[in-house]
Each structure stands twice: as C-alpha cells, then as structure tokens.
Length: 232
Image 1 (cartoon, rainbow, N blue to C red):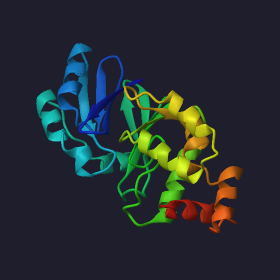
Image 2: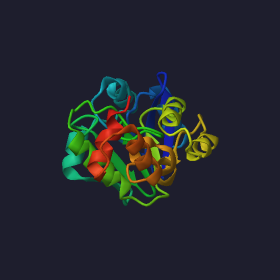
Image 3: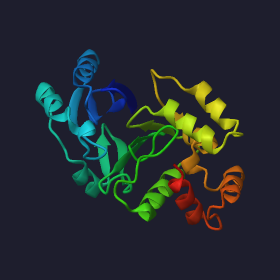
Image 4: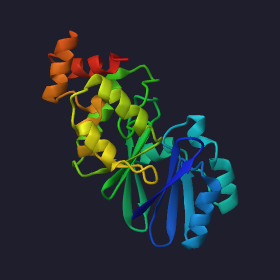
C-alpha cells in the first residue's frame, strides 16, 4: 500500500491510501486534487472516511463521494470493525480518544495517519477534557517502531518547534527536526518526535530536568505528562 498527502485550506492535510486499483480517502477536503490523482492513476475510490468529526476534516467529503460515485463510511463504524481490507492489505483503525472522544488513527505498512491526535512536532488540544485517555492514546502510538512515519492532520511544524524551543531551549533535536522538515511532504518518524516533540518527551532526562527546574510534578510518568500538558 502507498499513501499520498494533500494540502487544503490553510494547513489541513488529507490522504489517499491506495493499492494498484483501489483507494480510500481520509479527511478528503482536497476534493479536486484527490479526484485528479485518482483519475491519473486509474484508481477507484472505495470509500471516504475521517479521523474525527471536526468540520475542517469532514467538509469536503460530500462533494468527494459525489464526484467519484463512492460512499462515506463513518469512522465510528470502522473503529468498531478495527480493520480495513484494501486489495489484501490491512489497514488498522485505532481508537485514540483525547483530542476528541471519537478520534481514530489509521495504521498501514510503516505509517500512521494520526489526524489531530499527534501532529508533527506537537499534539492536538484535549477538547475531550480527558487527559488520562489522551495519555493512553499517546502511549499506544509510542508502542510502534521508531521508524514509523507520522502523517498528521495539519502542518503546524514551524509553530510547534518554536514552542518546543521555549520549553527546551538547549535541545539540539529541535534544529535537527527542522532541517528534515519539508512543507511539500509533511511527515516525521516517531524517533524524530521523541527527539523534539515536547509532548512525547515525558520520559526524557532533559525534559524531566526542565520540569524539576520549573517546580512541576515529575515523579511519575503520568505526572510528567500532566505537567507538560499544562505548560502554555
């Protein structure tokens, strides 16, 4: 399976996951660009779905399915089924509550489509209000191999690395992260995120030292998560 990233609106990112003949669309706001890609690659769109139900991720879906003769499959149904078969390949659907209660992540091959759960360089706001479940969702993503590629729902890299530098001004990983950034293909590995994304660095000794100096709670992993999430 392959993945194609599409930019739309000011910073949204949508995706096609596809094989030789068939594709699925995730957060399909880049309607015309997706249709053009499908046509040029002789791909049929099996269905469109979402990472969560915020309107910036769902607004293009109706037009996309109308233009392709496809259909919408609600991500809640996919979450219940847990897997998608695409030309014999397996796409795993993982429930990741935190940003919203209904957030999901899609896993295939060596990549994750993470929506607004995990961005490149930061994470989503905890609009659900449930920090504990968000923590467990992030821990689930951190269980994947370090070379797993992260394809997120927005390009917030410049802002997120500027904020990371405020929290950890002496972290050399931030400059290394920025040198790998490509606005035309926004992605990173989990190892990259552990190097620079402050919200994933709750077990890093340098981050623990930062929390100690700030006087924040840091004795347990979850305390460190809460402390980092409270930094503004």
